[in-house]
Amino acid sequence: MSNGLGSNGLKTDDNKEIALHIASLLQEIRYGSVEVVIHDGRIVQIDKRERFRINEQKSGS
Image (cartoon, rainbow, N blue to C red; front, side):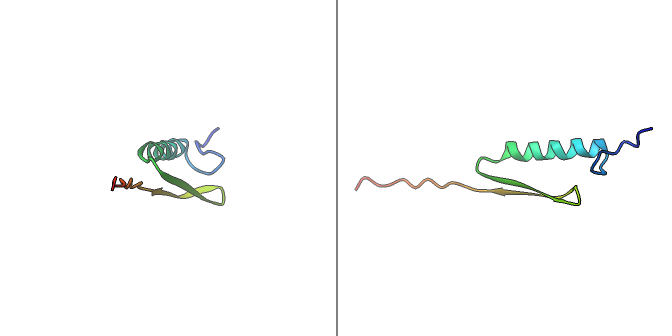
């Protein structure tokens, strides 16, 4: 009989929710990174760092 837990101790629905959240973060940013922090085989934190590029126009003078 299955208890509905994955090998990392999270429920299958939790795994899907985390995967969807990470995918959503990846779609939102143009420049930056997404870091997944894992302790004892479990995701404990997700960080998103977004960079903003500022294009400076050089004058023709």
